[in-house]
Length: 164
Image (cartoon, rainbow, N blue to C red; front, side):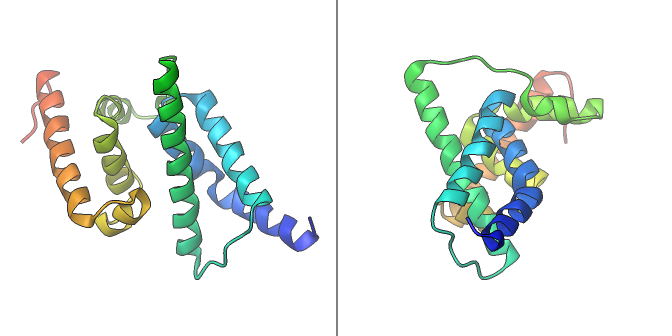
């Protein structure tokens, strides 16, 4: 690897490692799996052919899309092996008690709702951007957001927290 490649990968790791790790925590709910995901993603990025990115946003979307694909692969393998060893995952990174409570409720949602709600509301991506990352139509993302919010609202109401 030449110094130009090394500089690129060092900078990319600095920019995106934390975001990839947190995305892995949300998807996989396991610190160890999120750490493995982060290393695997950057090893693949370093050893594979580096695409030409149009912008920093294009690069970030590519990296997050790649991370999501790796998460889906890990979840498939976990399901095949029937692994269920979860830890506190992303909750360890939350500071405010209300954040922890809300994130617990988000993590209790089915994965398809959890992903769109996290990417849209927690990471701030538009429905169009979420659709591209997840390989879905924008209308599907909007439907999943709506259904996910309804399930979340229902969970919160069942827990004694009344939402409007």
